[in-house]
Amino acid sequence: MSDSLEPIIRFDHASFGFPGVIALKDISLSINAGEFVGVIGPNGSGKTTLCRAILGLMAPVEGHLHIFDCACDALRCHHRAKIGYLPQKGVVDRNFPVTVLETVMMGRYGALGLFTRPGAKDRAIAMEALSHVEMDKHKDTALGHLSGGQQQRVFIARALAQQPKVLLLDEPTTGLDMTAQHNVIELIEHLHDELRLTIVLITHDINMIRSRVDRLVLLKTRLFASGPPAEVLKPDILSQVYGKDLVITDKDFIIVEDYHHHH
Amino acid sequence: MIELFTYDFMQRSLLAAAMVGGLCSVVGVFVVLRGLAFVGAGTAHAAFAGVALGYLMGWPPLVLAIIFGLATVWITGWVEEKGRMKLDVSIGILYTTTMALAILFIGLMKTYNAEVYGYLFGSVLSVTSDELRIIGGLSVLVLGLIVLFSKELYFIAFDQEMAEASGVPARRIFFLLLTLVALTVVVSLKTVGAILVFAMILIPASTAYQLTSSLRTLTLYSIVIGVTTAVAGVVISATWDVPSGPAIVLLATTVFFISVLFSPKRMKRAVQVHAH
Image 1 (cartoon, rainbow over the protein chains, first blue to last red):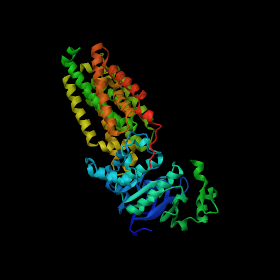
Image 2: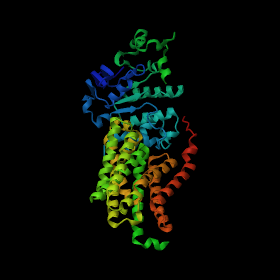
Image 3: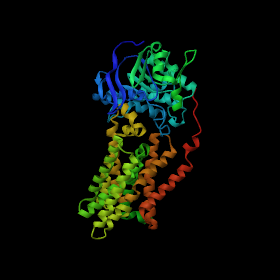
Image 4: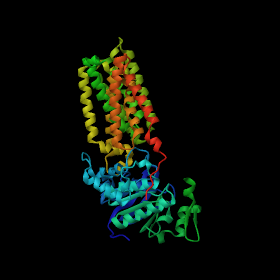
């Protein structure tokens, strides 16, 4: 469980979206320092909106959101630099001409601020981040030449180079083969244990994270459930959210048909 | 041939071509990586409308070119940010509107004005000392701003939303980039003309894109290709008496196709690095 109960992200009856189209409604949720939180829910349940809100890219239309005790509207760039973000695979152009080290160095830019050039210290931080994800040997390799799993490791290193307090990961295993999925999740768990990072992991893969997270947050436009995995992953709760798309096997393996139909 | 280089006009032309070639190729790196090719083409035509209005009203043409160029890129950037319309649609409308204005302004002129056409087709061999100073001044300004904000410009070209999420003031940097594109177009207008200026911005960076997978090397290659083809184009133009703009652009295009054929990236595409 988490080291302390100091909330660093606090949603207080917050709703997000545009007038007439509410993506997330009346969310009250606190994420504490050092916690490992998994966010699950069917397609269109507001997972990505939650992610954008935590990043300070979306202000609540109702209610409040506080990040590091700072109202979301007033979030400044140096606050954002404290959140390391791994976007969904496919959002970033993987053929962009950039090396592994150049990619990870970008993680330093927000923290450095304008007019300051990255120096030897930043390079050392970037190299340390690369060694955390075991990609330091590939620092001069073109990003586009790496496999999907290796690229994900590099993007995690980029987020780590920010020296963040929170690591926000949006579907980090999507599009990876089974071995790479397993390796990436193990890496995230290892980073949580070793660096005492607060981790918010958005995923559709319930089975992959259920034994690793402190808490699961189940979304379906509203906050449907939040608590230890054993409390959230009950057939009656899940079937209310996923409906007939849900299959629970006799070994308690949860299969959500809906996701595979849409991807 | 050597004698050619002793003429003042030739020295001015070569200097102008080198500066414009270098400037366009640096700005081009960000334009290519951020996917703003069409924005630049639209800006060039908007700036030309400013030049035409300047000559019609007797106002300074370059100042009006800057105003028209900046208005176009800022409106485009605002439309993209608000998500009101697809970027290519909004720039397509502005592009044709400003071109219609340019034709209207030229039509309203009572006499034929060869200087206006110089801005449309480019005439590097007739660059004056005063124009050279303006090109030099604006080049220093644009390159200075690029050096100052290079890390942020690279980041927004890579992924603007990720840059913003990481604490970079990405929206302001995006508008800075659009402003730099507009200023570069205006600086280059006299040298290569409104129709061809965008080739000077796109082709060196696109050529370099074929040759490397590193941002730093990409920028370096782009500058070398931009300056070399611009200077060589002027020499070809003066030696064989062909128009300078097409000479520069066709030479750059030839280099681009050669780079596509021999691109190491293309050859290596199938190669994957295996870790562990």
